[in-house]
View 1: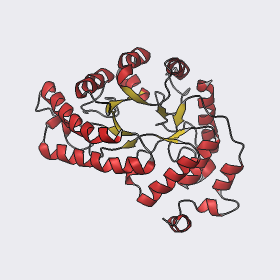
View 2: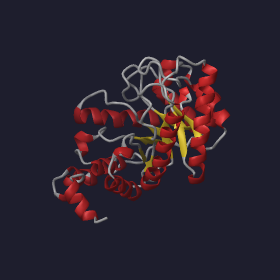
View 3: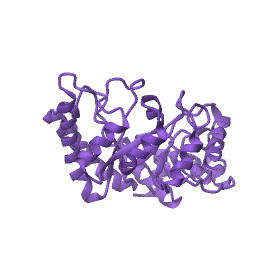
Length: 302
């Protein structure tokens, strides 16, 4: 790929080509020490400081001390965009976090139903995700099994989901890739098959593969079940990834009821070196809100 032509034609990094663009601002800003844990912002979180250019945003994240990045939507981006983002992540030593592998889960019941066509569609998405993961340097991809099938007992639904995940794991294992199952809370996502961490733990044990693990989203599980540190402890050997958001509001830590300082202290005590995806919004708009997000992570990381 002609890198200069891509930059010029795509508009992804227009700011990088001018002396006054956001890229220059990011590079000129004083670089901050790295956070102790791998917190992973997403695109748009620091747009007011870095501008709309995704590559400038990645540089800004690295300058602020973040060591990881996640992008649910990277599978939908063009190959050129994926390659350009991957190049910046390599340059700035940013670890790539999750992207969404299974994009059909908002439809009617799929994996829980045992329908052969829906299973085939799911496995096709997993195969396509392997190539994306290789291109962007990702190890983890998010999978949500979809809605409950109220025409089947829970036991049959669970068996159907396990069988689909076993077949998906067989696709991922040769590439050392991991699908992480994300339980979602009943309030924001009513009717989904997978909602609790004990359920996810049971399924991962049944699949019995290093390519099928849990994404423990602390925001979702605070709403769904609470009892966060004990549940994390019970699920520990099947958790491969965390995501963050305070409750209520799904904003940065310190804006709600969750004691993130204690949770992060616990993760450090467990020598957790994986990623913590910052899957939340900013509580305050504009640059002041972006500064508040960074300050909040400095506070809870200390």
